[in-house]
Length: 169
Image 1 (cartoon, rainbow, N blue to C red):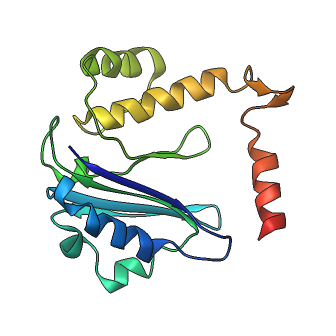
Image 2 (cartoon, one colour):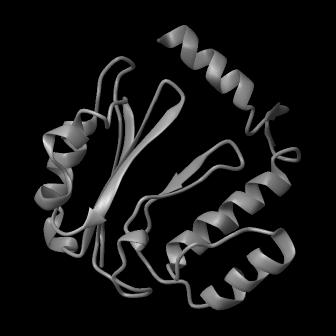
């Protein structure tokens, strides 16, 4: 059991405090670790660690978690270890930068992890099935991004996405 929150606010606003408050309310869902990731100016900002929400985030951390888009996670470990490295959200750089907060278990975690390493040359840093899931998603998006479309338009057109965001901001 874990707690997950995601917020998309108005451009120019910051969701860090709302994410913190939401995780505090969800604290009963996991007390092992907490994490928040936001996006601002095309950069991800991440803070995560072991312990309660109030133990992981101090004022100095919150001031760096700027952005109007963010996800948060409180962890109750059901798989993997209790290492700080397994606190979520997880992030991968390719394709385009992806972050994931996950609640659940992959029953075929070892099989997928082995395939990621041997066939797709991905490096998995932890024993967390959530990190495996994120890397598997990244591989699939990368393989399929040229084939996916909605109404003839590319499903994942990063240049158009960032250009549209710049016009809104």
